[in-house]
Image (cartoon, rainbow over the protein chains, first blue to last red):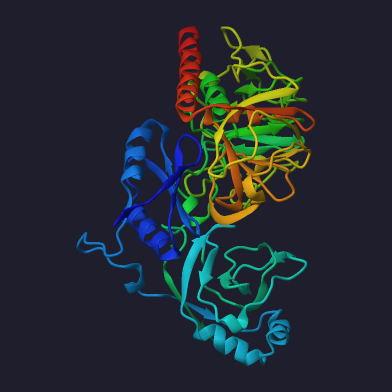
Length: 211
Length: 317
């Protein structure tokens, strides 16, 4: 076990540095499940860090917590389940996106092969950012790595299944976006009436099921 | 109007950018939801206190040119923040049924917050009525014709028929923020996670491209060490000063996105975020570096200032 270095982010928060994404996910899970530690108001995963935000009234307690954080690759707090053992979120998808033909051209693969390879992937939520419920999924087949569009769309529909670089994602709301749209899903990835409002968390496994 | 009917305020003219804000959505950043909320939560609290609301009641955040509002029923309002041309800031003002209030233009600062007795009460989402202008959650700038529902009238707001228009509350006007507002905005910063090649005691110009999400600053000699512009995306806090490759700093405000991929070279201290909310395009922002102990003490000092003002209001009621 080794102490995780932490850089202050202002006077009431810290960026805890992690050597890889698996460490980020283990730490994020420890700090958010079953609940946030006392005095912590939020925890945000980055690609190589976890931001820990303190309630100003409790900053000393949180500072002590942050200073004590160590990476434990084999957690022994009995009963805690490794993120990889939890069931994957299944996302039904129709592969009929407006950029599918262009992606086929860019990758040199037939469109149905693009779809097959995308659906065959074993994905994991890397980080959640950009918009509510927007999870950057890791694990995309390298043969499908394409650049973003040169000109982003001013409006990508909610439910669009997209790829860009090494990641894939589902747009939870209609937003501007520059990723390549290869399909769509009816599953909602952000719902203010749900608690939590998204089924995604950093480290969660995700599978796409062709409809 | 019967007791069962909801009181409303009608937006006759929207002003430049008027939104409903409360103290924001705290604790949802891990799901990609910005905090949003009033960019100066102290001002919102004081405005609410002046009209007898709980501190978390929703207010209107007005920018540069405020709205024109119609009040079909009697109401008590208060404006706190930058002085405005249409109504005296820092006082409770009682309005007759059928009144029209022109908030007017802000001077010296950029924003003010308007509370009404009972609070503005559109339906809350994720526990807050704030308009998150980055994601659209909770709406956006109010268009003309908006009918805003209010909560039930509080005891302070009850005005009998025939009471004079714009009758002011007792006691001196509440002044907030407790520093003079002018063309130079002095804020304190602590160093960020990425080192810079120069001292942080620098001056910048506020760009008109600034909004609730971030203050965009132009010109200046700062570069991070090794010219690092992009970094692995990580969580952000309000006050974080990003330095993109073009060298124009971007200072996160209360409606900032939850993550960012540019180097954070400094963080404006929490006590001075209300001052950033008053920085007008064309004004100068001046950074002074302090350490975290001083930053935390400054936050306590702001809380003490707020409590002192609230105590004085209590005595004059």
